Image 1 (tube, rainbow over the protein chains, first blue to last red):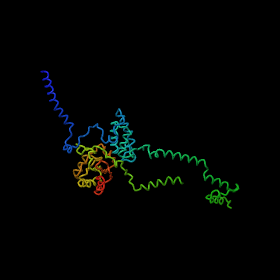
Image 2: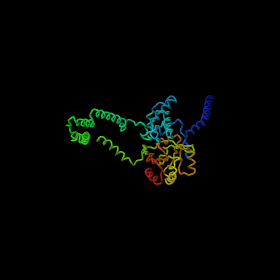
Image 3: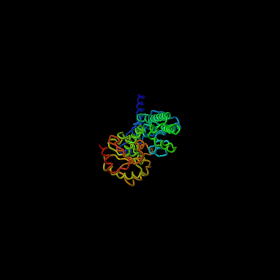
Image 4: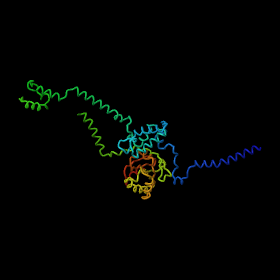
Length: 213
Length: 166
């Protein structure tokens, strides 16, 4: 009986001690009143929280957070070299001192330290600036032309050069015609028949050399 | 000859078709997409605003700076518009400028809407901002209807709001 009384007493004591604590806890999780929000705005999110916008675009991080500060810096520089600085002229954000480039590098670093991988980070910037923000156009769709056309044109050019080198040119034909038309060689070939455009030159050579007809 | 023409003519046509375009104006990929849900700190640094909390009303998000002369020109028009359209949330985001400069400017000129800081540039990056002034017109569902680059006047705001308020 005495024991039971003691138990009840302890229970009441514990409850009494817990209640104020519980009240404080409840207050912490309680929503702020609209008046407070109107004056101060919504409370700031914890510093390490994932940005709502980043999560909306990318979902959860699919990469690994680099182990050291140096590794983070190297990855930030690597990804930064693939992103175009929007306020510069064709420069990567890793190579620009512009304020916007500095801020973009900051965002890249933030995303790297949250564990987002390179493709996710490029995708995040692409959502806002379009494919233009990637310095290297991804190999897909029409972009394939950008990657393949130079190779095709180079090969076609090389082929053209080889073909031209094998075939004698009009200039060599003209020389051989005038040589053959020279005095002593018979001059039986009528150059004008080979190429009418050469007739006047042939005429002049004949006149100058005194063999004009 | 024929091959040369086959290459030159399409390029020439491309040039002629685009001759009136501003080369620095690149279409925003955000048009008809949800507005980036970034969090903005107010100028006093005490509270913040989440862009998604604007849903339910059309909104106008104006990126500006005190060093930007066209921004100063359009500020009066935006303030007038904020008074004419009480059903629309207008807000400014300070771009590449300090909260002190912005607060001093607004105290001097007066304003009918709040401005927020973006010290780490995350809002400007998320909205794909190239420079100031740039203004985004967002409908009540939180979809970006239009992005306007350059200074706005009463008429330009009225036209663009007509689409965002539908």
